[in-house]
Image 1: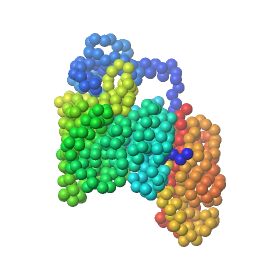
Image 2: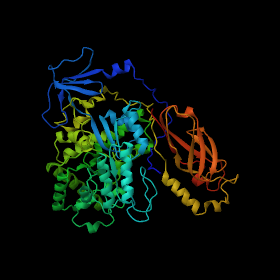
Image 3: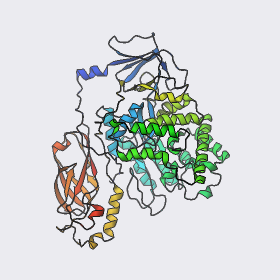
Image 4: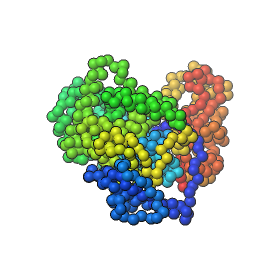
Amino acid sequence: MKRSAHYSLTFVIFLLFPMISVSAAAQGEQQATLVIEGGTLIDGNGGTPLRDARIVIRGNKFEAVSRKGQDSYPAGAQVLHADGKFIFPGLMDAHVHYAGFLAELLLSHGVTSVFDIGGGGLFQLARREAIARGRVLGPRLFVAAESLIAPVKPGRAVYSLYTYEGRQGPMTVEKARELAKRAVAEGADLLNIHRGLSEEAFRAAVEEAHKGGLPVNAQPIGPTVYAREAVLAGADILEHASGVSYSILKDPSKWQGWGEVELHSLDVRPYSEMDEAKAADLIRLMVDRKVYLEPDLVAEGRGLTKQRQEWELADYSLLGNPSLAYIPEGSRFKWLSNYKEFDTWEPAERERLKKGFQNYERFIGQFVRAGGKVMTGDDTSFVGWGTPGIGIHHEMELLVESGLTPMQAIQAATRNSAEGYRVLNRVGTIEAGKLADLVIVNADPLQDIRNTQKIQWVIKDGKVLDRTYHASFTDPFAGGELEAPDWVYALKLANQEGVRIIAGLTDPTWAFGQPCPGIEALAPYTATEGGPTMTVAVQGVNFTSKSLAYWGERPLSTQLVSETELKVTIDAGLIARAGIFPISVRNPGPFLSQAKWGTTSNRAYFLVNLK
């Protein structure tokens, strides 16, 4: 079965940390005790802060929360003296397309949990496991293994970095059920539904997800399912508050075609024509159905906020740190260019944007005052709409600007996100028995929400983190199932249009000229670390008797089966350690279209799972 694709711009081969055996020493480490003594505790539940708190952490969980002087603790415990400081739960980013090189940026800013909504299948699930076991640095990762999307018009193919199947037709009810069931079976934490589904297919996917205990995060921007339809179908969370603007328009007929491109989910112009009565009605419905909004105000208002100059300069300074040189240049450029996106728009359209954003903030405030709950997200990724880590602090600031209290903004970044994604029993508040994630700052965030940035310590899983950046940092689980599937699709189209005939290559195995190869799949594409030597089928196009497969830069024993399949041998030594490894195919030149296509394929990724 062909699976969805998700890839990162970072591709690395790595030396993985050695496996730590369960020994007496390890068991002793698990029982290590950390005590935070003093400080004012904002536990995430919204009540009166506790002054002179004492928090006892044993292993990776909170053991006791009380007032200083009321409880004893082991003589050998590590103690952090937090007098005069303020403590709140580890922050959460509810909308991330996670890549491993984001780890240090997120953790250093106190973001200890993220919700990856972009699919990624078994690859992202493996990364989640590696982080959970301490084999890879990263925030606690909650994963949507599957992400449902379909063309918004008949005959239009789906092009998506994380969900690509080249579908020409609509997603059927049966297909929607199948993908939702697969997410449950794979062990996903949530299901993500994008645009293009019919109401029937949308409802079917929600039903299957809920049967399996998964929350549904949705981006309903049409053409038939918008916010109201998604809420009635049972969606739990609306990312970007997607579909809301269309559902509350004064005259939807003036916005024909809205939602046909995904960027419309990040365009606030429809809010400029908001119908107040429709808005109030939709708010009542969402509050009644307990639907959470994840507004992504940072992403929606990029370059439009009054804080633009301050934030832009801060981001430039942050990303100019030489120790962050490992961040891909394309990511750095995209995060910074977000501020400038609307600068060249016509004045009239820019004014519509500004008015739309003001109304959007006002709508969020109305929703919360009516009893609704919001969560913090910034749609960050390797080419995302918010700068990782610092973006959540900016999001909280915009929530306060929208009418929330600082306490409500902190809850949006902690308890609400955990509750909406159904993991409140594990994270989201500082209470005995929960996983020990918290942030300690040097000034009161309830007086000024910007004080959440004045971080002294970040604790995840009961351990005080090193918040510095390291130029040597690498991501041992970089990559997804397939790189550039749209490129392979275009390559196949070029073949159909007679490129080989024009080049005189009537036989693809002709020794003189070699077409550019492309990979569509590996079968199998997974193994377990320490496994034996194995044979893998590389499936794609333009393979010849001279094709050679590579594991990174290491050539593999390669045998031609047909123009669309190679058999390659992967030695046991290559899968001795867990991780994600790139496989590519190269054909020797020359070729008349070499200047356009080259002689090397895209990369497919082989997953070596943890034992």
